[in-house]
Length: 119
Image (tube, rainbow, N blue to C red; front, side, top):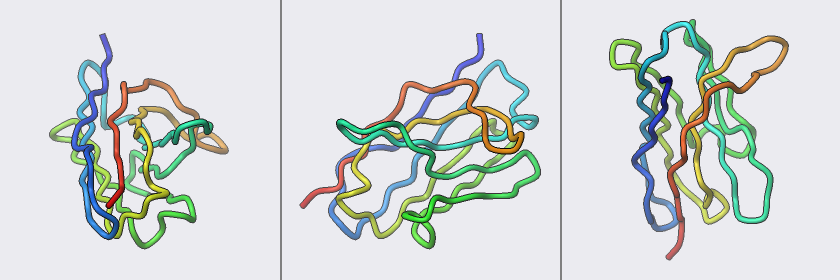
């Protein structure tokens, strides 16, 4: 059964860094466009970054210049390097395996990993 498992979340001080990892199983990983979303308490889930099967990337404005999405098809893994973290980045971060049509269409969800930015 297709599965995505996130890891790498935790508690970090403002200005710090974290690297989130999402490992996929039982899917043709290299054929998928991959994404990271986040959901803060009381808010809707929002798209943070995507990486297409050809390596093209997209970032929401609030993370441009601070976050980097990358993928390793040999390891069925997608990463989100988060630098210069701010309290507003606090959320549960979810990995998604989907596809681009005119926009990114989410498909398979992971269970999420908590990121807390606080002093």
